[in-house]
Length: 368
Image (cartoon, rainbow, N blue to C red):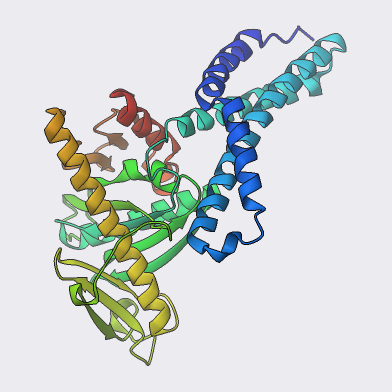
């Protein structure tokens, strides 16, 4: 067996990892974890639930980061030992294992590199995603449902929990809109780059002539609020309507008025929830979504003010941030980063990691 030489690849991974470790500042991270561990052991910690949640959430995130750094460092060391073993004993199985481990580590380091870029105020939060169909008739509502499945499949592949809160079915195919929650650390930071207008080009299955059709759908991503967030919503600012939950085609799936719709009168923001079994649960879930959207509105307004004061002339992402082309050729391309793949089926099945990584780098550095 010829000698296995992966030294160049390992040096490259170690170089990237060294930058990650430097940015993470492990000694500082260890000190912060120690302080939070002391705070978490205070006997009366949960007398103040908001403060307790802030402490425990921060501790969990920082411990997770440290554990990943330690894991990568240990696995890099173990990989070099494995390569040495494979070469000294001409062990083909050890060589195969080493090659597979190298690829696994390359992926893990790339994922950690992306996480180091997620240092925004709300990046570590869970996310609430709303998809709305746009122009394009049945093709647009069908496209909106395809996007919903795409994001739910992505969450599933990541091992993230996702819960659909509300769906408005179209009279024909697909959905008019859907709102769902993705509960995982840094879900918002990663999925926020998916916000914008998505465009689908295909031979329409809803057109008897089989003509090519362009349709659109909008994706909104907001961070999930936490108990420590202050979003004051006076009762006089909202209108609450209750109605019967329904499924596709308008068929009733609930015989009581358990679904809830909340309208925030000052902004015109409307949210609804019909996923839970009781009206009280649906109201609580709808209020959580409303508060999250109002928090995002406030954050956006603050950012706009900062940019205006700073004279920021950077162009926005534009109305169409990604194109999904199924005919006359096969391609999915992000118009901001120029990242593209030629397998739309895989993308619609949740293969979004490349797009998200490119989007995060673009947002931070202005390039992919």
